[in-house]
Amino acid sequence: MGRMTCEKCSMTLNEFFNKEEIELHPCGKEFLIKRKDDNQETIIARYDTYMKNTKPVLDFYSKNANFIEIDGSSKIERITNKINKILKV
Image (cartoon, rainbow, N blue to C red; front, side):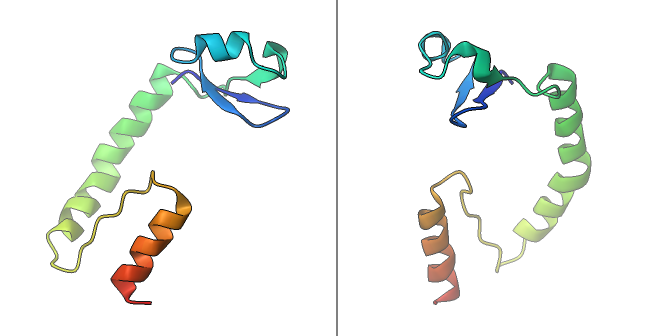
């Protein structure tokens, strides 16, 4: 919640954690856009959907010995290297 993206340079900032960067943003604050669905109601609905529809699938497959978890928030090169290592490519 609180994400803002610059229309000019595509930089992503957070209105709660990047207050100084927003004020000093080189493109100007007028280019920082907040998504309409970036609100508490949407976040709660997405979380509820995850818990109802996605988590049970994750729980089911995580019990399988072949299940391997990879951190998708890493850099793409790191993720690719981990997948290639698992697949022995």
